[in-house]
Image 1 (cartoon, rainbow, N blue to C red):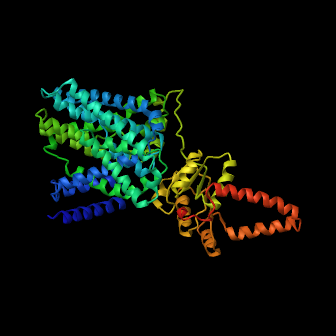
Image 2 (image 1 turned 30 degrees about the vertical axis):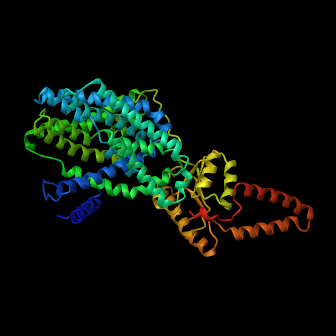
Image 3 (image 1 turned 135 degrees about the vertical axis):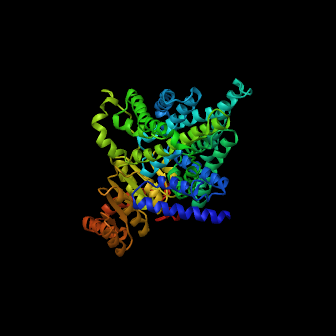
Length: 569
């Protein structure tokens, strides 16, 4: 079948299955895996360009981990590195040991039990990050911790995948392992230095064109991932590092928002290919063992993680939500078992066993993560054993802003001066790289972004926002802002600018709380001056002096034009 036709058929089937999932109100990720099973060798056997789909899947994985990295600033890594390291290593060790002894009791040999125990210890970074991203919770505490320990697990998995073949040959030496580690450190150092001394300097140039920003983001994320993969490391780690190095830039949310559609398309191909590669050979003979070991992953792994996090002082809800993220096995687990089969260490039925466990646990974990709030509401009374009496966990910084100001043009600058006097955290969103740079250098919280981009608006945390002010002159953009904020925070006060009475009335009909009409407001202010000052020339002179000083300050700040062209949000 021609490649284009093959892809068209796959997309059509994936869409049909996704539609069924939507009608049944089921997670789409399950639909994508089911699509893989349908089009794979088990049923229709439509995939004849697996290599092409694999490349598309790798692009999706790279973009997914790159966007995750954009949410991980170096400060977050420093704060949660310890808990990520302890839980990542601790859970792998505990699950491996418990899985080993359960496998022994089920009649497997020592070598088979070791492979099975290790395979059950790894959780899928890609699946969990996709689920958390779909929930819009990448900025939560449990998500930050989950990202950390999942990456620790990935590193252990990579070392095993590299180490097992080395251990099995005479080429294994301390030098080869040392070289592997040094290569990883050197690549990370190179990417960090390149970001700090090059990208940060050209940030303003990159942000001036949306098309170029989009292209640059893809080139940087996929390029760094390819660099890591080319040197024998995982592309996942490279893509994540690429995102982390850009996490401090004001354009990070704009980049993330623009990559979402591309990420979602390519990641669908990853899950379709994953589903098509699942193998079930003589599954009846290992079904009891598969169900028993699936329970270990679905229940045992979360319990192990909750115990570790409770010991470290985290509250039971955070421990519970984090624990649910390890209730499935990783694609690394399937690869590890496949390596064992290819080297003659394992029989083919072990691959069928782990494949079945993967299918059951991925399905189960998907529901557990997506409905974690409901599960916690039911189980909360029984989770006290996982929380210390002196439990205290760090609060997430910058979890939201009380006030958001869209646009820092002439009118926006007036609002900015007023906001500085309030005892509230506020965020400025602007589309002018020069303005963003100036505000950032002044210590003001600022994001570069297009207020007319619905994906960008959705990336802004407005859960605790009390007031939203838009000085954007475009009425359609203001309507979009209102709808985006209202859908997530109905109680926020929203104020926008309009230059025509018809636009103002339209905004009021859409539920905007107050519309500022600058021309009418200016006329009212001027008329009030006449009433107060009358014909007293001295009072006008005093006001005139203050006004001139104010205008000079505005010119010095770069606001001499009413609506600079760069401010079109």
